[in-house]
Length: 218
Image (cartoon, rainbow, N blue to C red; front, side, top):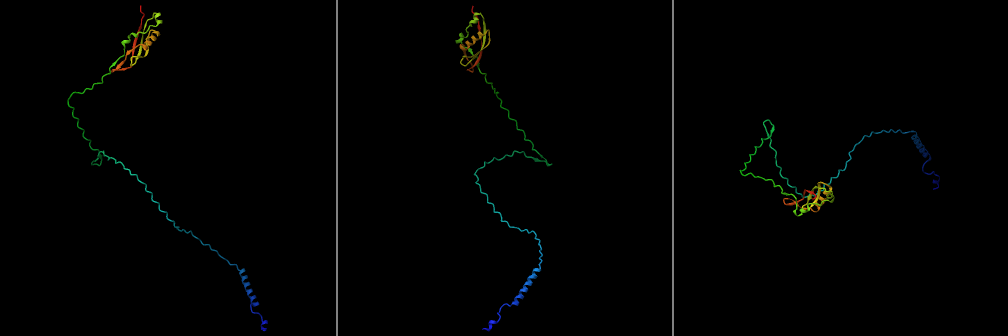
């Protein structure tokens, strides 16, 4: 037991450790001085085209059926063909068919009396006439100025006679003086009465010319 106390301990020997360290140091130094050369080669890459699948489109929806109105189309009349037939000739030309024969003449009318159509009769017109009951009122009053001056003369007036026989208008056509004209117009509008003119027995409006004389009595 005491003899083993002075024996060297077992483990790593110093000489072997130094040798190992020197070898490693030499390898590391060799690696530091040697520079590896790397050659990079580029590879030509070509264009690659690949077909990418596309999802198919969805099918379109069917159109909606629209309701059809129940309408009845009116039946059209059949068309009548009125075209004339065209007949081919020997040479290939086309000509119209010959015309239809003329219609036979109408038979003569049976003998008899000729029908005579008389023109309508002319309307029966009657002129207006002075009503005899008012004949005394025909002469107008003598104008005092013309009487003092001893003037005489005559007046012609055109009067319009209504359907009732009264004078509706009076116009002097000629007069010896204005005083004679005024006296005659005033008398015609106030006093004159006529039997109205008629047309087929119906009274109508008419015009008539009347002449009045102014004479002094001796």
